[in-house]
Image (tube, rainbow, N blue to C red; front, side):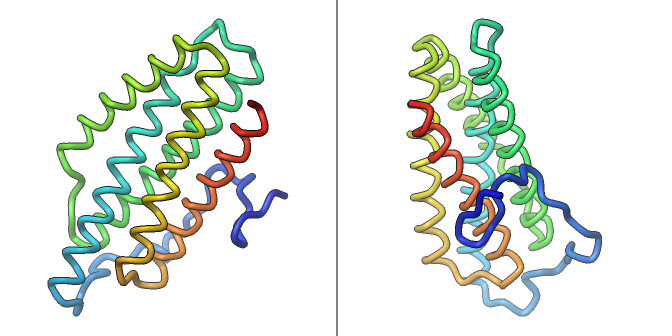
Length: 172
């Protein structure tokens, strides 16, 4: 078991139980707090869409089998993060932004570019993308007043990003 910040990051897709889903999560919160939550959840959702696409477009038959396995595992993990934030958006009564498609295009560009740079380029892109993610997580965890359940999901997803950085750096 590999643990970061109290989370087992070897679990790629944590289990979600039916009773963990709570609609109306923002009920009773003031508008300013809800606006910050909305903006932060959209940022998380958009950036995770970008990250998943980076990995999606790094996969190719010329890559070493072990590298493809690591890319696929990272992509699957990022897809789980997309789901986490999409669910949170809906729980708070929000919807994903149409801008997520622009982030997917950016992910495509970064993924293809790094794939053209070879295995080292793929790993370097992984470190760069995940380092940016960790920085966003830090900023949004500190600047937004989260409810406990949402904070726990965000902290788990951030621990996963730290794990990605560690894996990519170890392989460089």
